[in-house]
Image (cartoon, rainbow, N blue to C red):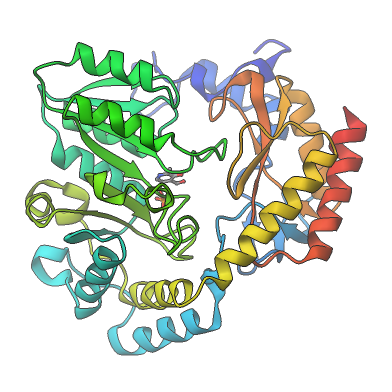
Length: 417
Ligand SMILES: Cc1ncc(COP(=O)(O)O)c(C=O)c1O
């Protein structure tokens, strides 16, 4: 591998020319073993030694030592993963039901908890019915793979999550990508797809940039073409809208959305995914969505914890109000430092560094040494010219933690530029 290993990324080693399927490509092996890449890779997969609270402990890969950090990377936006009532509900369910569901939902995996929680989620999202999955990725992949067939067209915003893309690939439908949040580009794709069944997918909050879908304009185009719609509210459920139902509620357009997806691993603080829609299509998906009907149902104690999380988050607006107050405070602090925050309109706040992978990794190491856990986001997860750090704001951040984080960011990123 030449000197400039940092110019390459995982995007360059996808096709394996090795005759043995179980041996990685030889150029990948020399790239991943290169000292520069090994240094960069240290930032990924570091171990948390406690709950993903703002004040936590990690086993730092920088030096192998335990390090207390201000954690600004977890998606635990409302602090529900370790909320005392959530923990208590999960503990009680653990005693009663045991650890796992021990079966796929169609056979022996459906418990009263699953039925109740799916009903609660459908009511919350104001749809007729809901299907619960064991993971968010499985939910997107399974719903799309179950809905679409060869001959259909799946049209996605180019910034949609990999789980939607993989669902499209599995379904056999033709996939088209419209330019990010651009109704004219979507219109062109739908014109091309005339006469075919079409499903259009977009996200409520885009996970790398923190901007919102231009929902009124996008839905208007879909309506004109009678295309079905699918919203991924992974990063917006429980945070947006007067009742926390998401970005569709925020725009007052919930009833215009065909299918609404959410994950249970972010604001809910657990793990799993769900889709809500009309009762007929949810029932149909039970027969055709493999991650639902060929996979074990979600763990009962987790479901019990999630039911409590939904109750806690929706009984009043205090958690999301606290989160929004923190978004306001941190965004102002970062803007005062003249940092490039892209078009963020949410609790996902990127700090865009630019094209230098070397700088990104140098900053990442220094930030962590100073006690802030802020992961670098590199190409191909984001475009090579906009490598970044990404803050996930939590309702649990204190002013003192945010001030300390802003100081570290100023010292390392602003002064190190
Ligand atoms: C937009 C979006 N959709 C779906 C998922 C998958 O969710 P999960 O991590 O719960 O499997 C993610 C995860 O990061 C995501 O950002």
